Image 1 (cartoon, rainbow, N blue to C red):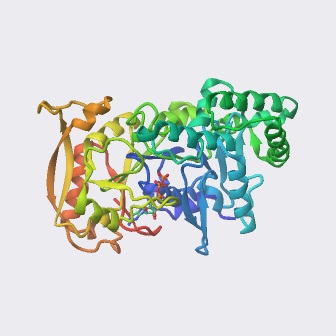
Image 2 (tube, protein in one colour):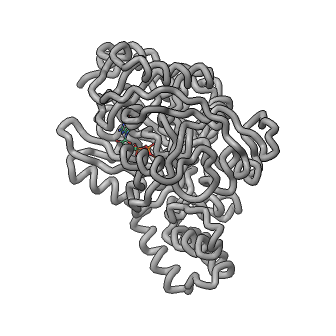
Image 3 (tube, rainbow, N blue to C red):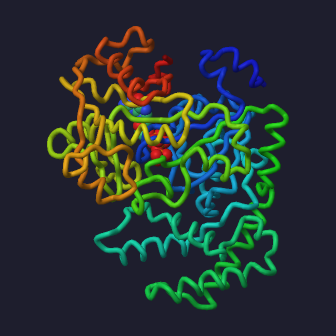
Length: 443
Ligand code: GTP
């Protein structure tokens, strides 16, 4: 077996020198291409952990034979047989979905038992959470959030209401039925369309009895495990889902997700101390996209937006929904860099801009009366009415998808990269020039 130390020696020094506990987080509204970087880094870490979100995240990864695996809850270290995968306390776990992923992996020869640890403190996401996610969006009608309807928001609601059920509760099936009754009765009293009776409860309890048996070998006190791993000097990679502009606190509320996809979420979602965090890498597209509802100051409408959407294949992976596209938003990016204290950035999809004669960067916002905004506004009406000032740079109009070294990039592409670095004050260490694993430039 190849040890982590042996593998480290083959790495570009950039990866080898990453901190013992490192993280990869999204900087915009998700879909930045975090999956590719996580996939590249994961095999150089002993533990890969998820700290927040649920099956609303996820990406496609490939094993060494090119076989495709779609992961939503299982951390992407799973394809490296000597990597442990942790689903932390901050994650919400839908067991039918988790077992489906595990079945898919195991039937393709990827062993999971003993390699996936699920926190006993993580909350269980039931099918009924998914059902009320849909009912809630219908109720909101025109003001709908645009959730993935995977039940993530309702599950975090149960957690905060303090009637949620945790993974560790599966070890006490004697009280499980009463707890589930409280949860389902609550939903039935709130949502007219939610049908609940004793038969529904009985059936669900029977299902969860079977799940409890199957999950037992995976259940772990992951807070203890993570901290022990840190003491043993194991290398840990934290895989963020969604992104800071969707953060429940810092995002464009209420058009946000229900967890903390920012650096703080790494500590609260895994039970590790802030001082152990080494490198946190922010992943940012060379332009901006957004799905779901909510304001988007640098959005490009009409043909210009269509051009980016088609070049970048910006259509939702599960729904096929077209994503709104626009220029890079430096105001939002600076705000996100402040919150997360990134050590470096991964600029993805630079290749998508290759045909453009000119590229714009949204560098500041003004109020509707023309006065400058000093920071990213909390107030959505301010954001909706804001006017964006742009800087325009020349494009490179050359195919860069086979470039592998920074010095081989066209001058205009380097100038664009360096202008972003200068404006946000964080170095860009990784540049994506294509979807493939090797289409990455280390700067
Ligand atoms: P969420 O966790 O759902 O926010 O997604 P993600 O950030 O993990 O994004 P994902 O890995 O789904 O990447 C989005 C798409 O972009 C994938 O199809 C990637 O293959 C593709 N992609 C990633 N990097 C690049 C790049 O540099 N250039 C191009 N052209 N495509 C890229």
